Image (cartoon, rainbow, N blue to C red):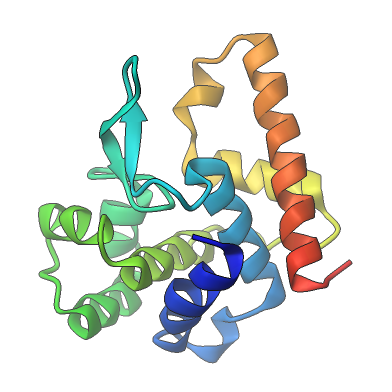
Length: 177
């Protein structure tokens, strides 16, 4: 999916189901940059193995695992539980980890909404558009990517460089400095 397509078909409709204060350029930057980092908006299921196959434990363009923050965390967090429940109702999904995890593989609106709620649950404000490093640190804290945790120094350097490219691409796409 292109950035235009995911913005129009996933992120925009998801943000329309949430309070208007959640739809900000900062939020859109984070949602798009994280989606690019996690899946390039091409894979809704984590690729594993050699050759890579879509059988990993993470689903959606934002690569959420069944017990992770986007599935279980936002459902239970005091700051997001009621908003998450309204998303489940709007999308016709039962409020269980298994049902949510299954649904986000094919429901980009639900996945984008839950990704936004995961960002909302973070105590600090979203980084400014120019704050690539702050955005990176928020991504690491909220998504806890395994490739970073288990990565070698060279792999970590490539992941960080990839983030820089993704963040710059999103800022250019959105026309924000």
